[in-house]
Amino acid sequence: MRTTKKLTRALSALVELLEDEAAQNPNFAKKLEEALNELPEATKKKAKRTKPSLDKIETPDIIEAFQVKGEEEFRFWLRDFDLITLKAIIKQNGFDPGKNSQRWKEPDKFIELITEQAIARLKRGSTFLAPKDN
Image (cartoon, rainbow, N blue to C red; front, side, top):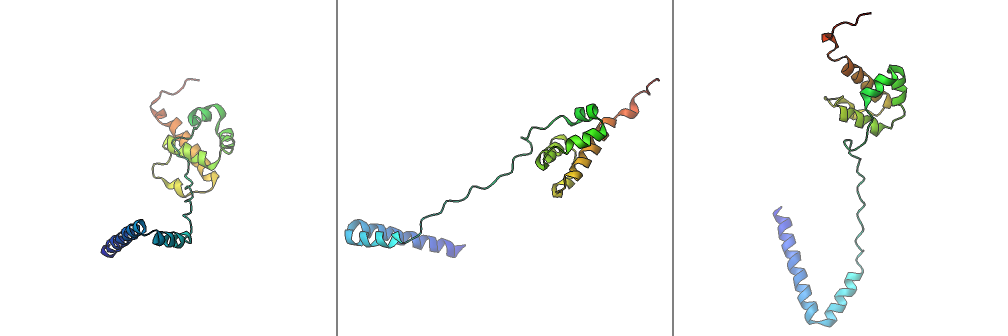
């Protein structure tokens, strides 16, 4: 780290010295300009591709869709979504608190997790309800 600071200071002093000499001597300034013209121009940095935030992706109401469609049709309906939307559904609904699905690449695994969690959410608390009379 120290050598970097020393080198930076030395180069700064050298540039300052060159600027002073170029200001006083037009012939030197011309030669300096010619020498610097051979340097390559700075390249533009490529903008980093950012993944869309999973919190900002609009997702459907999964529980309502499951209730309306039933389990089999629900699974087929989920196949229409891309991988990013499936991940957003899982994140926004808190279906994977252990974050095991972050390494997954296959949509079928996401669909299975979403379906299992939707079923579990619908069954939650059902043991405390009185049985239905037929």
